Amino acid sequence: MTVVLRPLAVFALVMLLASCASREPARPLPGLDGPQERPPPDLLQVPDALPQLEPIREGGPNKPYELFGQTYTPLRAEAAYAEKGLASWYGRKFHGRQTSSGERYNMYAMTAAHKTLPIPSYVRVTNPANGRSVIVRVNDRGPFVKGRIIDLSYTAALKLDLLRGVAPVVVERITPEAIRTGEWDAANKPAVVVDNDDGPPDPVPRPPGAAGAGEARASAPPATASRPPAVAGRGFWLQLGAYREHAGALQLQQQAAESVEGLSPLLAVFSDSTLHRVQAGPFATREEAMRAGDRVREQMLLTPLVIERR
Image (cartoon, rainbow, N blue to C red; front, side, top):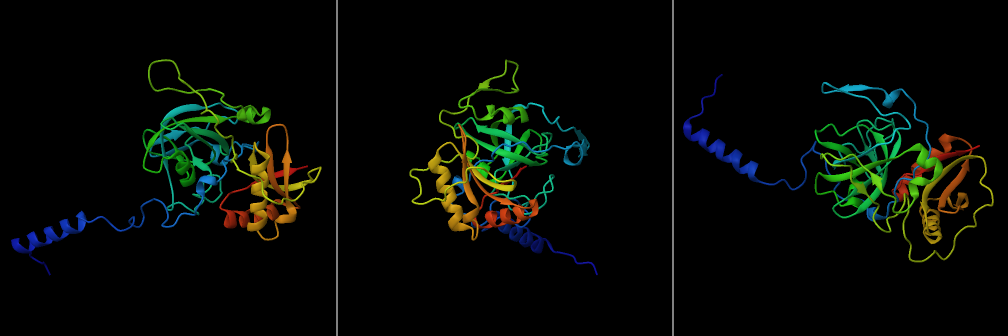
């Protein structure tokens, strides 16, 4: 049966739709990305990703791929990369979904997506508008929007003050060579970046006093902390964070001991000339370490790294 609307009825229907469309929804519409209703507290205290040497295989997420009619060829494992461009962030729509690396996306970890950087790799992202800088681990592909060069996790965008929208950033890869030599953590070292104008590349120095990866500042050491062993045993270890100040490492050690049941006797702080690393272990297998890492993520809202000592 064909329904015929009279002119008056059509006008009323149009006005009703216009009225509905003019109202701002109380919360983001289903299917749209954005923050969760109640993000965890203290996300500004989440440590940066700590660069470490990880195997980069040629296949899998690092083979050339095609999307929307365009072919992308990931960079070589040792390739340097630096660029200016626009950053965006992705949140609850992808939270818990599988990334290109096979890991689950955690919007509250310090990660990012990039179209061509090797997976995994580490980059320093700087917001030139305020001088803030963070280090994230690239474990996903994207963003596939013209003009954008990196898609940050919610927490990384929060720490850079980029949650309000797309904004310019400087992205510099921390190469495996820089990780091997420790050069990535040299304070105030300028980075030469690819510029979009016709002039020479602009040097982009790290902000004075900028924290290295995984660094947090603590006002005072905790009252108690377990004594680290003299030698780290063989096996698999979880690295929770790394600090320039010993007090910060002790504070994280105590926080982990109080937050994650059964972890306290496994915690230790290992120090060298530049960093104090908070680690838990050793675990007999990688699977056992990863199960413990899941508990750390749930209780402390940080993603530890699995390290093997042979």
